[in-house]
Length: 451
Ligand SMILES: [Zn+2]
Image: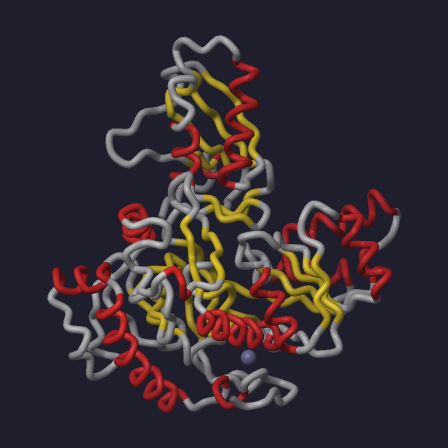
């Protein structure tokens, strides 16, 4: 492992020539596939059924294991709780468990071993360093700390860099402001929507400009925004600080994509730990890494011990930039072009519409189970609360009580603030096949394009 060089946290990896990186990836992939086949009945069966031989992969080009999806992992977890048939290690080897947003009302659990925690910390440290964090930074952390991978993994990585970690969490703007002032904080980690909110809070509640906080760096993530030029420029102007973006998720890596000072897309920061492929979202066909190509990300862990992913469809759609970056990193840069599913982001929390449905259906017969999520703007970032219409059941009389119960259940189970309007049974559209749970009001007039 090389030492940070002032530009990169791990220059030996991050500046490794692309061909050399692919040799390293193939080597680790072969070992990982052999090991996973032994340790996980989920993968052993999936591969056998698909006719994929984990010992026969001779190049990254002929790596054609079947895809895995969020839904497959969920089923695996239901079949063998708590971590699933893909867990691949006994619980005694698991040192921590986080939750990722589930496609049902239940969270999906992600366990890590000692070695997994090491690789998380290493990759997230590269991300934060790429985003500009240095040992002399005092960093106020205003993401949720519990359960969520934007919490402890960021603490571990901040400390690995040698910066000072100040855990504040969410819902405490007074404490965020006070700690920034008292401790002379130089950096703030939060969602872009929280940074926008905090700027308003400073002006409206404290009668001060956010720039007076003296922050030099905003490290945003957990939802899209930090890479949208208009959002970034507004935040830079508000705070007089640089704004950098990071992306990841509990299933793949807490964060593995980061903007560098060049601000031209997000670098893949964990290429020695994670093989990322680009596929055509419609056909699943592998696409070449060429300038301007657009595709969906598919991720394979190269050394993960617990809950390893093999050819996992991340559902993020990106376009790629392959030309050398002035920062010296050799990894491709990704520009996020959206999602290939309906995942929503509410105050940094990932919310699957199907999980909302699961929670609402769980309150039957007081509800009919039918619902519609109303989006005032384009999404996938939703300004809280999440607004939805829910049908009450035919025999329901206590509508106020029911409204409160649905809102509470969504907050308790999905950690999402919601505003519920109750509508009579039969009022919402019915769908023969997959229900369309989201109604995008903004599309009604001039915007017609549906993915
Ligand atoms: Zn760069």
